[in-house]
Image (cartoon, rainbow, N blue to C red; front, side, top):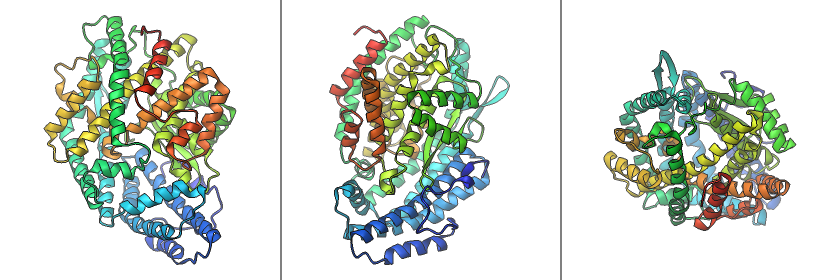
Length: 571
């Protein structure tokens, strides 16, 4: 298993329904477990609760098997055996699981548990029943396979830079170098490599778009946007609310972003900012280099989490001891970073591509927040509540940890550089809010214009970057700007999954604002909210953490004011 520690993991709860030994790649061993659940007599609520626990046990074991294969594949995209194992599960097991899970959902709905504990579960099950179509199962399988091909292609891209082969992630370090000619050389080299594959990326997306539109049509929806809002369980906000967020970013965030860009241009003494000028320190200080080895990164993160709260230090030590981290960047590893919960062992796994930059520290803090969220809900035996946290709140857990942990960056830096890193992070939050608005608005356009041509798609993207990109000069690199969306893996792998980051960022900023006023109370509320898992509706989770669930200008304005004050910028 490529040195991954899965063989050492055991179920958090002793299995009482699923056999201790089973081949999860053999459907003939799995089917009898679904048969047993189908045929069990449910005479009363006690029977139904036990049946639900057994269903959760089976689902958790299957989900963990899927996660193990996914993790192994993304850690080693150049390993043919890992790819084969992942695709075997996707092609031969998951398509058979979906109708059996649907049948159990139908059985539950016929005799539901009606106590308040099951309010959210019942709501979610009802959506599952409404959306399921057997004809979509093979289409969803094909969609997963295409997504894997995107990861394989993106993860394989390398360039020759000054005599050495480099991954595109490794090349990102050069954008922090004070030498402007070097930055431009590196940026152009990476950009050309992405553009060499633009036809492939466009073709992959066109296939995905066609599949997704067919899924929506089969489920009785006019377009995929309407379908995915229901499929993503967006009960508490609408597409109109998302457009309100776009408008709020334009009115409240963009003035601050342009102010930051103007300061950067002046500090760099440039007539205009170019794409390779957006990451370097504007005072031309050397790049922040918080660590040189992933062990230094991991050890430093241990100290930060310990300082934020001793229990978080214990949680992270558990992950290190159980080897639930793959932090280094290397050739053949999928791009990006994620936290994936192994739902039977009830432990998190963190995947990322560290190359020695400050963003790596922020990524580990971010994924650490997800990991702590997973561990906070270990005692919940209903998988739907343990694993079904609304993404909008799951990202509050992670983004809050970036800010809370960021107060302890002296672990990696002297005080001056720690302040510089924190300031840069706040500037990045302003930038990412604008990027989130771009990506979400773009995806709204993609699926409400289902018959668009690639040229129309590129034009729509460019128009949105004019709205949300600020004051950057792309003259001579128009093709690069028009195809920049190819780098956003969510558009390929997780359609319409991006606004969640914007909603969550507002929650995280509110938690941080609360902690600046009263640290212990804010952290206690944060951790109480994490322990709720997915058992309560989204607005209640935000309220438990001490946040407003609102992403209009009224919420954005005071948060941008706070950032402006911390950065000592004029109003």
